[in-house]
Image (cartoon, rainbow, N blue to C red):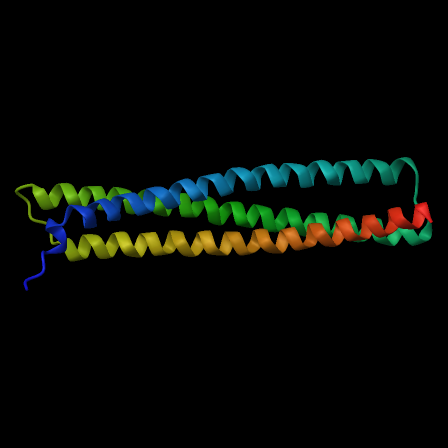
Length: 163
């Protein structure tokens, strides 16, 4: 049984074009959500700073609030780095889509561009995007863990006020 060349398989060409487009969309949504998270961190930092300036906390809660400010700074750094990876992934996936489309067009034209180098280039660029997407997501997990630590501290403080 003779296999159909990949360049003649419409599903292979469609996959080379559609997969980067789906990943581009995912990266864009993550970048948007990360921007919103960053805005919330900035707002929380401003709120906390104003609160500390208006009424100084007691010695016990001062250390906690300073830890929170430190965590907010770390969260902001992680979010900015994650956004950079997401935007880099958007660019890589868009480039992979463009290379795939260009390869498909040239494969059907009079200029016979070899399919393997075009597909390999698209795969390499898509891999760069996927790695960036994965790293950005891991940074979001780290940022979420920092947020949960802060939330646990605040819950413990609130319980102390009730008791």
